[in-house]
Length: 264
Ligand code: 48F
Image (cartoon, rainbow, N blue to C red; front, side, top):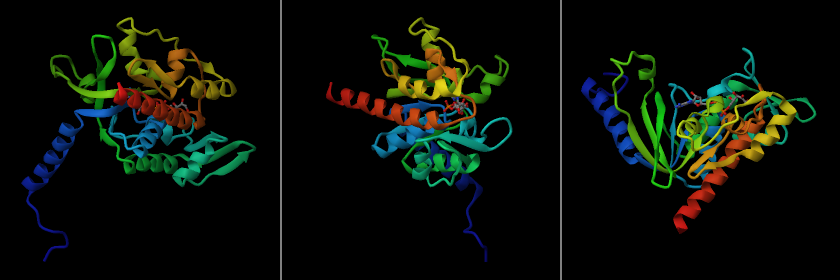
């Protein structure tokens, strides 16, 4: 008599491998690929999933959440400026009013709820997966990403001679934060020019970042801190309302591009 159903070791390995490979085969082509699983990317994933869009997220770490696990310094309390706290209501995350228009929430609670909401909306994830390059068509339109196993970036070249694999999509969202890793691949080819993020100024940064969120190159939408890097906007440091609103807007923009795609 056992507590858990008896299975062989080989069955465990086969179950993992076949489930993963079935998903990889299916998601070799998606509607939208989101690179980076911080607050803006997760928010975009949740919104797109709710629209019925097929979304794959590529994240170099073995965990999602980016900078959303911690508020600032080592303190795990988030600050969010109104009206972005309404998203905490949607996610069922408790929060407190600090002063008029400024709210605090427990970062681990908010982060885990946002990850769960994105997954509930249908998001599939490639973890430990590094964006290595992009797919470009003849007209320089982005048509997907090229990825590799992220630990190889830390191995000596002779050990890490692994070819990457391409993944196709109609839209790519750069949600890689300050690095703007997808945009940088276009900059290396002279297709875009980034200004680099400005110094910290909370009041001046958040509205501008949401306003500038959008398509930065045919087929590529930027959201979150990647937007600040592209347009030279001030950084906002330990406050997160703009990340959530930027993710929402990126999803709307991606949805509009998909609609145009469908009718062209
Ligand atoms: O940095 P991150 O949280 O980006 P975000 O959504 O939010 C920024 C805030 O956390 C905070 C802030 C504003 O309050 O200043 O920093 O803009 O998450 C970015 C994610 O992208 C992943 C990285 O591991 C992180 O989880 N990432 C970055 N480069 C790559 C990548 C890459 N080349 N390939 C795959 N993932």
